[in-house]
Image (cartoon, one colour):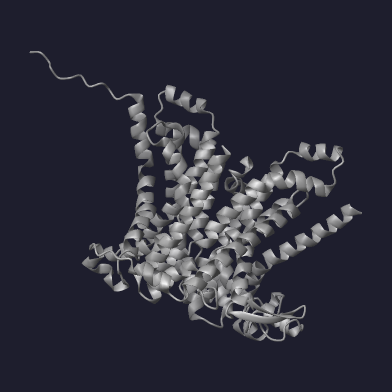
Length: 277
Length: 317
């Protein structure tokens, strides 16, 4: 009897959670396919009439509100950040794990500490510094900022992973005359595919979703990333919610798709330290 | 001729290693130094100088005219007390709610059943979706004029009139015969915080739950323990560490959060927290000095909590 009650409660609980998690995304998608008149006249229409699907919101957002440009900016920033982040974190993580040097211990402990520094504390001085020099309005600068935000965690994740690799394989490579970099390229990287994928995904997520610095630093619309662009759009239209929803869908879908695809890997990466309690 | 040149010892392996390590870490180190360490120091400097947005290009930026007037201004601002209270309420309630929801979700999902992977993927969406998308979507859903929740609520008779969730400071309602004035916008923002960040707690708690050895439960069953006893004496102690760590980190991160409140309410209607004042001082009043002072305050609070954390984990060893 107790079993059944627990089971019923569990199913009810799951349904509640599923609804509150999924509904906003459902609404985002459904609203993006509505026309302005539907938004205004039938706001409570929970369903979507397949015959009345309207792609016009996407067309408008892409071609009349500059989102084609914003997408390419976001793609550029995110991919470059990922490539640089993975590269630097790999060699850096390897150095902290395998190479002996003064300050190695210190680096190990301080890596994550850097991650705790909140963006709001960093943004004003950086804004001041770069405005003064005149280079603030730049997406390449954003890339550097995002690297600063993701490298600590990326380094930590890769270091944790490298520590689980048996050093014998690398020793064998070194004895055979391989350089350290060669060992990294030929032995460590192929063995670290899941960890590298986690780092890449995590970094992409941070760079793609980032709002604060994109909002503060970028002035010229041609340079806007998607996050910045969505805010711009929302500020300029007040009733055409379907446009804001279409823009939101465009920002969200890549991340959700990427994530669902690699779900297991990313969860592994995110909870790397959890097992130790 | 005697060759009196000193013979240089060739670089040892240790030297080579150290040099290689240097170059491997150099770019990372430089970036972090320039974009994290330096700004904090720079922030301290700015907080001690009377700087406005117009001074940014002037030479006065580097003069040694240090002053405490920025801190004076911030602390003597009549709103400061309520901003501080709002920040703590938001932080504590938001952290607590997200962890409670994460705990519930973890228990709901824990165990073997079909579709579990999919469910786990779904439950993480609020956390990984871009902040601009989820804030605008929720703003739209809860919009008093166009939002589906208000339309359904009013048409089905749940509400007498639309509720402006994010734009009204207080909401009077009758609950159990008592008249309560609920801080509406703040509550809405806290609820959003729970929704957005519960996946973080969910993931870590679930991972910990799945790492608890089955034998512990089996042994307890053999000894005749009820499900509740098993939960209280086995599960809870095993979770205690992850729960406290979660609370600490969520506290720190929520305390320093800017994006969510800014995008939902711009800090209006009683949701002004310290991070919002950093922005308001800098771009609303053009007072960079005061803005930096608040940022230093945030940094100070962060440092205190980090010191507590390190003290705590060092003690455990």
